[in-house]
Length: 209
Image 1 (tube, rainbow, N blue to C red):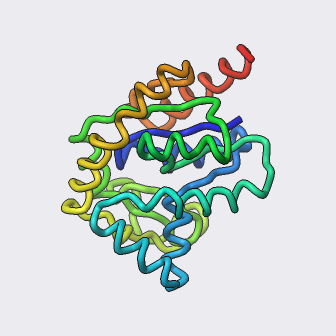
Image 2 (image 1 turned 30 degrees about the horizontal axis):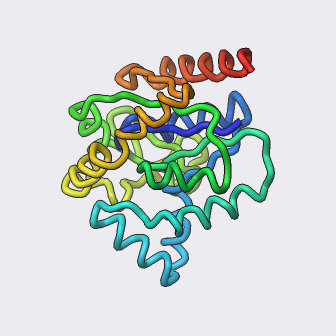
């Protein structure tokens, strides 16, 4: 089963992915993490990807598809895609490597997204996401790694990414709705409630198959 997550930055995709991989044994394909891993290598490709992201733009579809195809070679049964597709072009190109069984739209207001992003900390070791308002130090409570603010977590960059989302990504809602695979969830709720709703949708989808 292949699941696509759609949501504005700060909508909780990373947190939801953690729940799905833990509770339902999904293999995550996070294009954001794939890009960050490549950036960390210091390669020419990594430098290019970083430059694109810092400008608030989307990484080229061909580049992302190559990283995804490599990840899919693990041949797991269930995958959840975090950060791809982000445009109609990418959604159509994705058909070359796999089908989408369920698309989950995490609907979050822009105001709440901004509040979450300015307080977001990510563990450099395990990738779990926390809020500055809920942790008392820069040590990850899960793996004891260091909590850091992501290099792209600044408001100027996020406003550019919001523009890209509303222009390029939001049309995916109608695209997947027409394919009868879209589920919309109110992401203004707690992460726990969001995860329960998404897991229920997954189970209902499997029941209908």
